[in-house]
Image 1: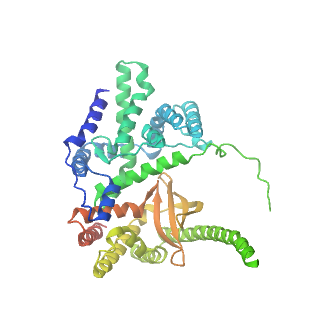
Image 2: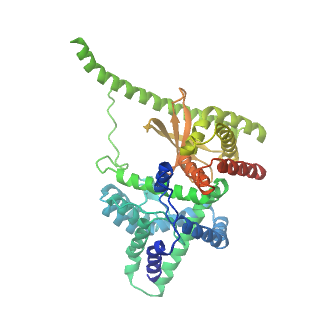
Length: 261
Length: 203
């Protein structure tokens, strides 16, 4: 936990340490509106962290992810990410409940039960085929559903593109992981580091082609990643908000529709 | 009072009419995406030289995609401050960039197929949702935004996982312009030109 406390303290103290971008003067209303919409007042600092993170990733994560993609066929990589996703189900379920999304909570619960047993600990995602689709759900999204604004854009070491809302969400989700409640001991410590390491490499490897594509085609990759992150999160949150429990779930097979014509 | 009655009658009729028109456009947009997608895949999977395929794809892009409209959208608030020459140069570079970007992905979609899932109105345009299946790769969901503004259906945007291509690129361009001396489109034109020569050099 000390690590996350440190991260959190860093996130809170950044505004004080950081160099700030100068907003455009009021005489340029469109430029000012643009500046507010981008909402990246720490841009100079964020860019430095972005550059340094990239340089570090180039000699650590990227080769690891490449090796991972080279060594394991796609089917195996999918199974790894299925197992990791299954381990995250309890936290996801808690967030579905906190968002008052009964349908999504039911989906997550059924996925966990089916995939942990018939899916052999999550290796096979059987539940998706049975009408319980997966969906993202984390405490950052829960805060958003409750009405918390995202706050300014941040690029943090290890976390990458994020915002204060998602930093708090990440810390809360990590603290709430039930594995932490299983007590302490060398076994638990090894398990935690192993899952953290595998999650990092597996996720990075899955995203590597897209990351390379942005770096290759964008004129300003930093601004492009910022926009992609914001849009992606907004879409995930909009999908969670839009989920209506009153409609018929996918797994409920309707009696053959009466033809009205 | 026939006028008042006809007015009352005409309101629901007009409403029904617009709804029917939207439904009509939705199915037309779906057909258009199906035809365009089929045409692209026919070229990608067909025989013929790479140069041949590129030429055929370029023709499809020029016809099915509202390239100038997208280019204008992506320049955003800088479009009005650009000089006529800058606009012309920018649009020409933008077209080359888009065509090169599309045709450069030829190999990626070899053996692909796609299904059309939904077609629905979205902010005045039609969003056609498709699922792309490519051998050896995870399935990808892609929304094609089709506009009828020019009279015929044209693609104005692609949306994947909630991220819009033109919105993303607009913030990329805005960043290049504001970071290089403020409010001058010339910085973007120079950057686009450089990138284009780099892409053509490596591809």
